[in-house]
Image (tube, rainbow, N blue to C red; front, side, top):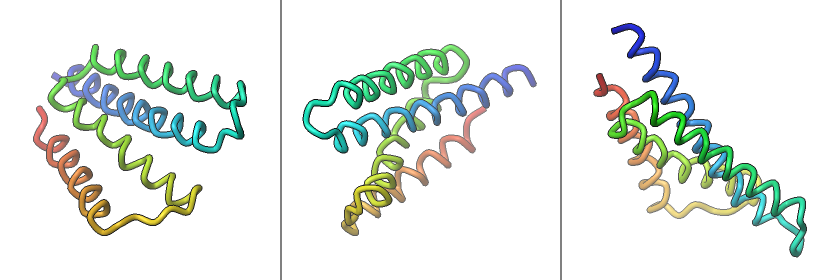
Length: 112
């Protein structure tokens, strides 16, 4: 039982790292000056790492828990857009982000 809990925790951590990778890659492309091959390659590498982490996480955890955690990439993307690109968040987006975070917490707490 404890081994299953440890694997589920590992899967959740991997999925959070996946979400971070999937949110940084479009930021790199947004900051890309022209068609710079280094930025383009860096973005693709992060996408590849994110996809690999996702596949690896699915081997250890429950799909019904991990897939909603993947939606945290929207939250991370918005936070990065505010911090780095100085974009404004409309109130409706803030409400949506709050609902995503709340849903992930509820699903995480209610998982086995």
